[in-house]
Amino acid sequence: AAPPMNVSLDRSEGSPLSEDTLDTEDDTLDTGDDLDVNLDELDTPDEADSLEFNRRGAASSDSGHKAVEESRLWRSVVIGEQEHRIDMKCIEPYKRVISHGGYYAEQKAIIVFAACFLPDSNCDNYNYVMENLFLYVISTLELMVAEDYIIVYLNGATPRRRMPGFTWMKRCYQMIDRRLKKNLKMFIIVHPSWFIRTLLGITRPFISSKFSSKIKYVHSLQELGEIIPMEYVHIPHSITYPVANCIASKPACVSLTEKVLNFQDTDTLGDYLYVCTQNLKY
Image 1 (cartoon, helix red, strand yellow):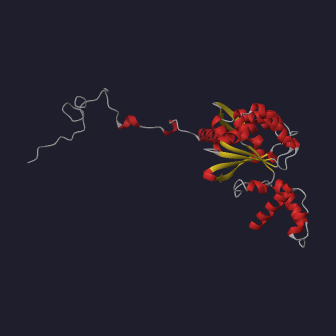
Image 2 (spheres, rainbow, N blue to C red; image 1 turned 135 degrees about the horizontal axis):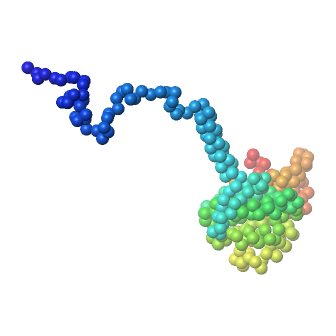
Image 3 (spheres, rainbow, N blue to C red; image 1 turned 45 degrees about the horizontal axis):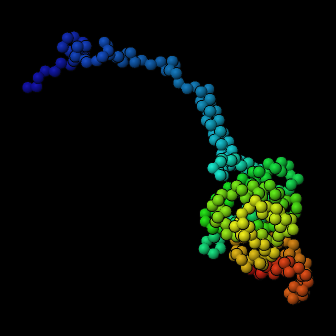
């Protein structure tokens, strides 16, 4: 027969609920009566706390958006082992001044600098804009170029008031990393004006003879197309428009030969033929 079991709930000696039997650190063990909870006295988050939490969350989100906006308005770059901050907002209208024009032989990069996109010298905060644009051009050049490259400087359709000054060009040359100077294979100036020739003549004492030997003057887009592939070189509308307008203004009945004979300037004729071939492509 099974031994008798003591299921008494009292705390008498020998009982399973005896204090001597329970091995606890406290003198007494909390019972269910001691665990009565008054829900009204609990410190639970009320509606005001919830609103405060939401406000903090919204503030945190706003600060995050501000940080993103800040990164769009300002860019930190390192040039010559020195960190600079670029005001991206002030140069936004002028960022087209530098672009990637594809590649030529052996994957050498073509970097296009369109002077017609530079700011007017009479614009507000001109020096401040040019300072930030200078940093943008140098830092962008470093990002675009991995190995050998050439620079195509489009001087056409650039009025005197937009021409970069001597100090700006000199500083650009001085700030360009040695690697970039070494890897530059050619500096092509398209449609060189008397002013740009004079400006480069003034800078010659400050630039190396090796760099000077890389400068090449090109007088027409046709001539430029004989040196590099033009497929990805963006020619600003302000450069091609005068020639294209000249083409459109001539009667359709006039033969191509007659149109060609009307051009006294061989450089303009070259651009005319170039624009004609581009129009035929499309």
